[in-house]
Image (cartoon, rainbow, N blue to C red; front, side):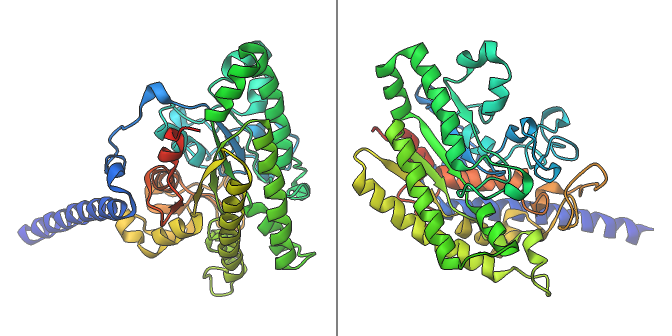
Length: 384
């Protein structure tokens, strides 16, 4: 009996030491990734200058969607307003976020000093009496299933491409102008952050139903991206926080394309090419457009770093979905894992709340290895 008690105590001690080591390793890796001025963020020390909080406007796909698709007549597979989504959100509320809790949009905006991402445009529009009073701090236009190209998402009955989201921003801009006047509105918008996370669905559509070559797809995406960014610039946007495509070949759904269960390299190769091309695009646009500034997050490098150093981040599963089997959508019948902080993926496509937190910390305070030419915190404080 004494031996059993001792063994149990020993195992308990080993587990405690293991968890301490994981926390230290995670903090140490973040220390290496981040600039010296941002170490406080790595250790969750608030560093936000609340008086300088910018308005934030968010565009993109399901990685940023905070409830847009709740109001759209889209296919159920690109909705998330049901359990077990939101199980770790306040009051376990399924808000339409494709996450067990806060998503990447929330996590970035929280670091900027807000409680969470601003509400979706359609949610605000649904409460017309308070619409004008709530748009001044920002609006979220992102929609799950959408893409850069207008045709992306058509199979889900989703037409909320980046271009359509910018059309919605024009409505917001017009309303802000009636509140503040043209000059103050222009000044406010020029200091606001425009955060964009888009492109993955364009690639998924290509992989599932290829009607063109990878080269043509890349050219079309970049040309469309240029036009969309130029449209925002012409309206008055100056500060762009861009998140590139992650290694989508490593998500649970894409691994189904690989008979071995490993990452689907065709998707990953495209993600790398898209990042390099986007970097060139933004560099050229900055020269072309006076006053434009940007931060480009290398989501591919960030995610692969976690996959390759999973233990250091406290991640024990980088390949399977916490909720669902990779084939089916997370829903009330697919009971999720208990150790959600140890999973890279929440469902077949999307990161867990913990993964989103790691991504946001890196985007907000990371070194040029992960965010170039500077991170989101520097973008926010940069005078235009």
